Length: 414
Image 1 (cartoon, rainbow, N blue to C red):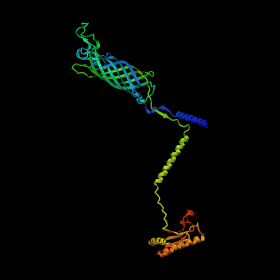
Image 2: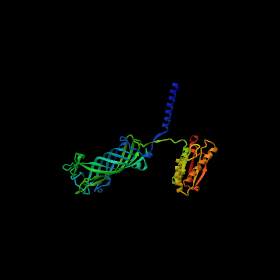
Image 3: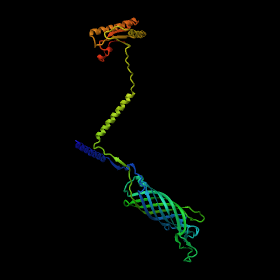
Image 4: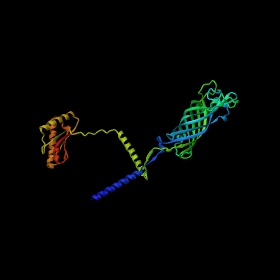
């Protein structure tokens, strides 16, 4: 017996586990892009970018210089992170070389090239280098939605930073060529270390090479605090620089984006019966609501209250004579009848059918009702106001145990 019980317990245990496994397999959990995408962890979606290109410097007098002689090299190095498919930040170092013209002679500002143009302007060439940062917005993911493996993305950014300015020194005391007024000194670009502020914005066109690499074309505008370009003018007038860069970006793991995970419950193989039952239930609910509304709007019926007998006089077995108490009761009944002379009353004689025989019971019914009527007449109730009758059934048909309740005379309004 114990072995059978143990084996039954083992079978039930395995069946329960199988049922749980089956139920677990029925519900699956998948990412749902329609719910949006989650912000990533701090360690995810980092990148590093290197870019090189060319810039075109614009300050007050530069249009006097040949435009083809105003292009200068530029380069940048960044580290950045995308916090979502749309929003990212990057920070790094940017270097620009700027070429232009100034009306300020040598020695009063950033130092200039020894060659003048039209005996009026001095060529200038200096470098800007410093830290910068940008806030980036992926326009493609914003307007078209995020799509893994998309070949082309366009992003806009705005940012700012600060530059240190460097220019070459000139030597006015000793020149290698007596015909030249100025020459470069040996300390190179170390002269005239200045600090300026820049603000910038641009568009990045990114092209996917593989999961980890992207090529980019970065078109940028920079506003830079300008140095003294004109005699008698103050510092820090804004100059402009337009640049174009070709870049290479490496994306660190994790590179993709995760959507919220939602449970997916499989539908029954055939849902039509369930739909039909649902429709029937909805129709039944609508019908019940209509019935309830109609019931609530229906006026409440007036309660019908059956009037109880005006009085009931009970007798012992085989007795029809009235006692003193019965006469006192009939005196009160007679007062009610006389106060309501237009009301007719019915006096009914009763006897129980559980004792005696029909002849005896009939005599008892008549004697009892006639005795009550005679007493009412004696108390002043007109004979025409009362009607005497007998009833051959049981007044209370609850069985022989309660036969005493059937030996009575009842007085009721007609």
